[in-house]
Amino acid sequence: MFRGDDFREFWVRAEEQNKATAGLYDALVLAEYEAIEAFKRYYF
Image (cartoon, rainbow, N blue to C red; front, side, top):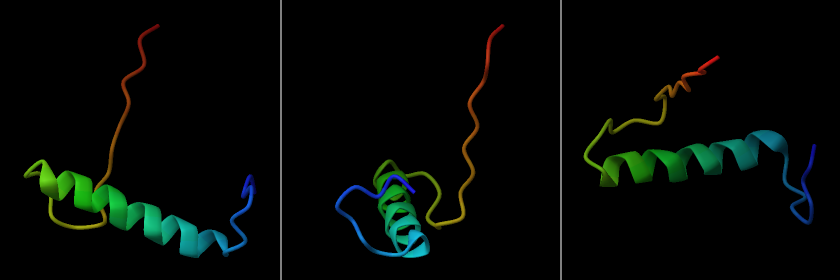
């Protein structure tokens, strides 16, 4: 879905994105694993 020019399977793209996000959090000295959760607060 919405792949554009990327013809890899969804799970391959998602895994790569998750590893990149984990690296970013690690660089910020936050959690050092790929199973981190993020939440967005909605204001009504």
